[in-house]
Every structure is written in structure tokens, then in C-alpha cells.
Length: 158
Image 1: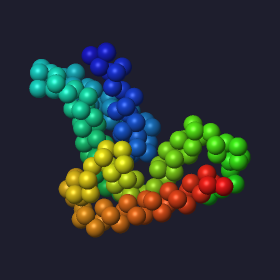
Image 2: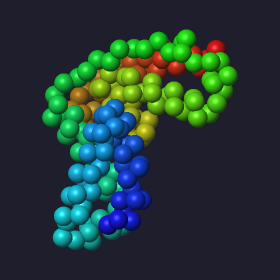
Image 3: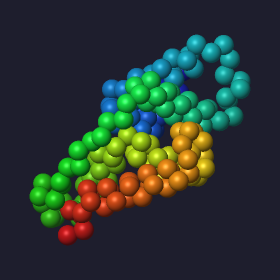
Image 4: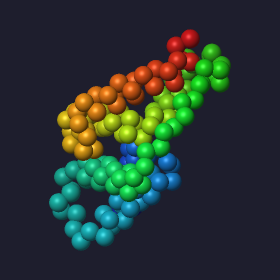
């Protein structure tokens, strides 16, 4: 079990964090899934694709947490244009970090739709079914996400 935890913890945490935008809550989600795995009598039904099983479990656990909170927090849209030196914009790690931060500033539902589409590679129909919203809402949320990301990442285009 220790090896499973070491192998899968970080990618599972990242998937949960992208959805929840809360470090400690993402950690809790991964730990809850690992605890449930530990309590199982047998792992025979997940041996063929343990990583996929854990990933889906963490996604579902994170979705349940979002539904439990039953609130959608509208984040302020920060203006990053004057915060970073020009030379940093050419650094790949700076760019990746800026993108991750910009994704975290998206409103909750918008961020969820974006993460499911771009990181989980789900179709619009799958996202609509999972979040119990219409396909048109998924499309509108993606449009909003791209608009907000363009605005939040404008400092990289200088």
C-alpha cells in the first residue's frame, strides 16, 4: 500500500487541486480515496488499471465535495500585467506556473468545465452529463474560461 501511495499521490493531488483550488482540501480528497482503498477486502477488481480507478475515484470525491459545499465562489480577476518582469515571461517554468495560477482564478464551475475538457479530455457531452448541465452551458463556460485566461495571461504576450 505504501508503494501505491508513493506512486499515485502527486498526480491524484494535482487532479483534485485543479478542480478544488484548495491545497489542503485536495490532500484530504486523495487521503480519503487511499483510506477507502486500504479498507477494501480485495483489490482484484482494480488490479488491471489501478491508476485509472484511483484517478476516477479522486475526481468523483472532489465532485462530491464541490456539491457538498453547494456554493459557487466568484473569484476576483487579478491584473497580473505589472507584477512580473519581462525576462521571466520567457522562462518555461514561469509560464507553466502562470497558466496554473490563471486556471485557479477561474470561477468554480468555469474551472471545472475547463479542467474536465483540457486535462481530463472529456467531451462536452460527458462534461454536461457529469455536472448535470446542458451542452450549451459547457460551451459557454469554455468560452468564458478562454476569455478570462487570455485576460489573465496577457502579461505573457508582451
